[in-house]
Length: 323
Image 1 (tube, rainbow, N blue to C red):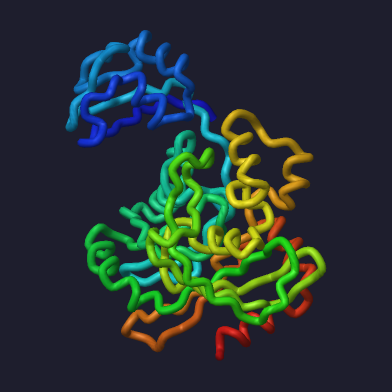
Image 2 (cartoon, helix red, strand yellow):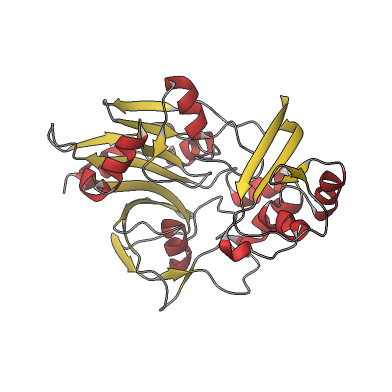
């Protein structure tokens, strides 16, 4: 569905002095340079309420707005699992492919906005999942609840467990990865995180649930919460997630998707349309009740297909959570 939409942002300190066209092209890459130039020329871009000029230099604190006429968002699933509701909190299951908050093209149909429309409340995320990762997310139902619970999140969420289908056979029953992560200058995939001695400390425990000749099903437990932590640690081990466009195949499918749509052959090579990582279980300690495990069953179609290759996986995984 096409609609008119006005997008707004504030220019930050590091952006002070940048040319408008340069900033728009780098910060908002859903349009190329020529389209942003046309938007400026036709008066769709404003700075501090006035029509902008192509060669205008921006200052920190400037208010930038863009009238996105005929805005069309790509379709995403709004089939959100509602797992637990309290006065202050929502525990939900996010579908694979639905972003938690706004991206370049998806503004209205984010998880946060889907929940705000459903509950007519000011829903706030207490943590995040990558767009392609499905599963459990804890949200606050007001700004006050967000402030109150954010500072105590580690004592509320005392265990987070993910199902991960990875490439290759892993025979070790348990692998603990204690490997710092950071971005790498000069990497063609700028959002990728790399194992390094000088990054943020990051720890993940991987337990083997089952292994086949080509793929292994793991239960991943997060001990820290860094960007792309599970995905980057699996790539460090040489066993990237099936379907991971950034950490498998040297990121070439991620780079290709920026320029054009991926083909059916591309997805067959990847093994899944969305990477096979699902936030499956969380242990919540809400204070007024005993600590309890909660599960998400909202698997993507591809995740379900891969799980079907591992009979009795659920029984094995649940047993691991009890030890």
